[in-house]
Length: 295
Image (tube, rainbow, N blue to C red):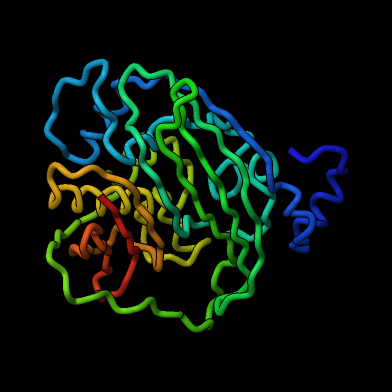
C-alpha cells in the first residue's frame, strides 16, 4: 500500500490514469504461506470430472492446479463492483472497469507436493498505459515465485489488463482466425455449474463468471465468461496427454478473446519439435487463447 497520500489525491490520480502515480506500485510485495493439503486437489478433480482417487502425503500437485492454493481471503466489504478485491492495496488502483488476464508464463522446476509447507512471494513488476483500438488500456505485470523452504519450485508471471467497457455502436475487433493444422482436438461444452465450481475452488469473486445480469448489462457480454486460467489448464492437460512421460519445463500463454458458457469451443494442438503449440478456438473458429508448452 502506498503511504502518506491522502484519499482524495488517490482518487483523483487514479481517475486521471496518472502513469507516475500508478507506477508507484512497482515493487509492491505480498507473501502467502500455506500447507499443501489434499482437499483442493480432490475438489479440482471433481470439478474437471476426473476419476476419483486417494491422494496422500507426497503426491504431486498437477501443473496449474496450484491456483486452488495461496488464496487471499478478502472480506466482503473490501470487494469492488465486479466482485474482485478492491484495488489500491497490493494491486494498483487502476480505475478502468473491465479486468482480464491477458497472458502469462510459468517456468517449472519441481512440483509442489501434498504436505509441503509452501510460500508464494508476489511482486508488481511493471505498470504501463496504452491506447488501443478499443480505448485505454492499463497493463499490470505481476510475478509470483513459489518456494518450499529456500527451494524455488516454480515461478510465474501474470499480465493483467484493464480497459473501458465497450460502448454501444463501437466497432468490434474480431480476433484472428484459428490455425487449421491441428494434430489433436477436443470439444468442451461449458456450463454455469462448471464455472461456479471453479470460481468457488479458486475463491474467485469476479462476477463475470457467475452473474449473468452483470455480464450482459454491465460488461456487454453475451454470457458467462469462461475462466482464462481454466482454459490454460485444459490446454496444458491436452498437451501432456499427448506427450506421456515427458517432463514439463514451461508454459507461455496469451488470451485473444473471451469464451462464454453459451456455446461449445475446441481445444487444439500440434507438436513443433520439443514444444506443443496449443490454442482454444471459439465457435466461429477464431482464437480465444494460444499457449506454447515446452518439454
